[in-house]
Length: 96
Image (cartoon, rainbow, N blue to C red):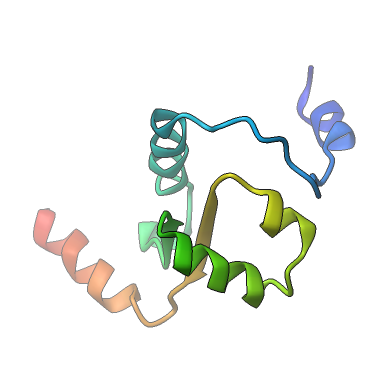
């Protein structure tokens, strides 16, 4: 399947099954997420895997109790951090 065929076939999932997602799959996805290309490799984002039941309930409420959030076995929040670019730049320079 080529890229454009894949794009044309994608769908948004609004309701999930009860099937558990293996922890190693979540970790693999998170590791791949931080490798996404970005400007100057500054990676201005953070990912939060919500595992605590009480916090998950709070996230669901913050998502207006939408079905997608309520039925998701796992929730990962992506946060854009425009204030972290200087810290990340300094870490990159330090490693060179």
